[in-house]
Length: 227
Image 1 (cartoon, helix red, strand yellow):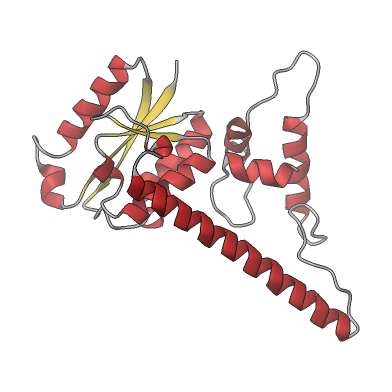
Image 2 (tube, rainbow, N blue to C red):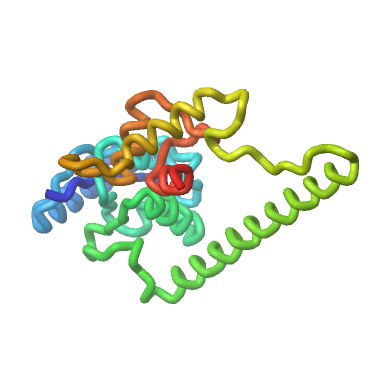
């Protein structure tokens, strides 16, 4: 059975205390959806008194939900409505992107639709194209910056080496161990089912291994580092 985590949000303390229009209503809608779709809701996380315009890093409940998806193997985040995830479209899409990179889709209980696959929504499609363009620009700018730094170092008589990849820094033995652990988990062995990227991320978190950015491990991070 598909595992899901519920996410609930209200913008004010008054809504959080409301027995009708706050969390109870959202919880009932999410449970009804999970029951109808035969989805196992394993836990819920909430943000009480948090505006829908606050980005993901400012929401403890949503950030914890992402981490728990990796730890539990949940592949779906269920919200009552799209505006519970975010009232600002860019904020909402940034969250969709973060969960998508972890292999988790976000579904709205009121429509049953996945926000992750909402390419038929012109506004969301435009925002995704803009975010992808910004990400590509940032990658290109970083490459150009590193190249310029290497060239400058070479002209000054130094060694023109770039940044250390994860697991290659001589002064970070913990990264070397973590990289070896990732490769061990991802190795194909006879008679053993190779864990998914999300499962590896959850194992790394459970073992207390830290990523270089100190962010919770995601399937995308495991994939990129393990190459």
